[in-house]
Image 1 (spheres, rainbow, N blue to C red):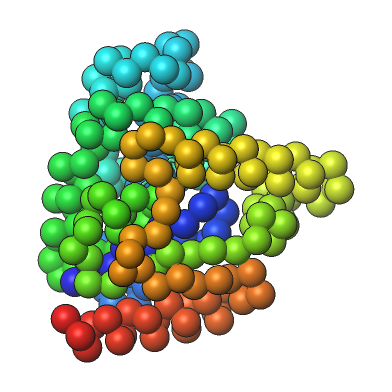
Image 2 (spheres, rainbow, N blue to C red):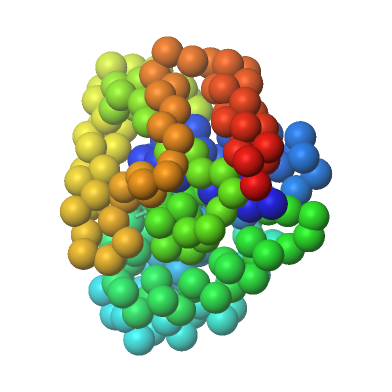
Length: 208
Ligand code: C5P
């Protein structure tokens, strides 16, 4: 079974994806890490973030199972990732490996922006997470240890900028698949969001 979780920046996709994968004993891929890894490699090499050929060349060096999530989790890399993610050739170069991951037995959870729409349109369960930008900024600021009002405001600005870029790009924009279940986590803690997601997946499993 494939579980697809999509949603905007800091909507809790990663945490939810990990929890669902643990619950079912499935593999888990945070697809945002792929774009983050390419962005980090370009930054490190001093290459421009819009050089598609160089970015595509870097994809073969990205280990799907060995991505260093903590090192890639900085805000600067997230911002750079959303800039490289607009390149159609780069997205195309990453499709096959994501699909191969999704086909792993006994099942897989993939989270990102285009899992339900492009990568795994036939996924048995699709969840599209939403939460207000303010709730997402509060959570992300807390994760980053930014407790000042200024820190919160900067995170909120970054989130709004990333939402705008991810939603309005020409290729694989952030949007729910027609058959995705919308889950609003604005007022839910992690446990409540997990229980709500679980019931969506259980119902989808009964139908498939
Ligand atoms: O989810 P995360 O914040 O780690 O993603 C970083 C960036 O990578 C996003 O802002 C988005 O532009 C891009 N991304 C994407 N498609 C995905 C996952 C992430 O375009 N499936």
